[in-house]
Length: 96
Image 1 (cartoon, rainbow, N blue to C red):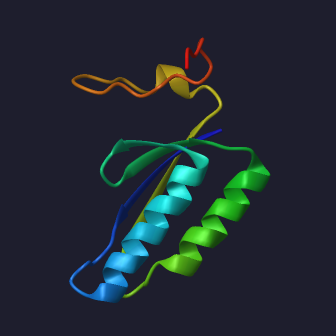
Image 2 (cartoon, rainbow, N blue to C red):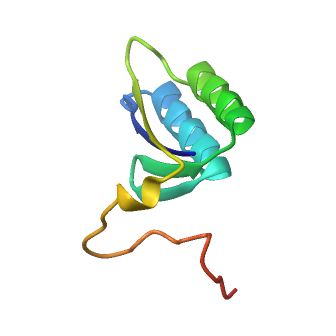
């Protein structure tokens, strides 16, 4: 399933900047950044459970915001991209 994860972390303090880095790192471990605070993560149910717990552990619920959008298994018809830096399609052929 594809989960779109967005976050807004208050970074006025050192602890806030640290939370921001840790949340971004967690998302990068499971998906790809499509905008500064937006990640597309194609996950199994077990991976989703692990990632969600990790994110909820890192954020500060009184200062930060996490949003999860579940696009499901047939997500390709629900996403349209315009502009620079299209997301990588990991189901397509990759040349490294």
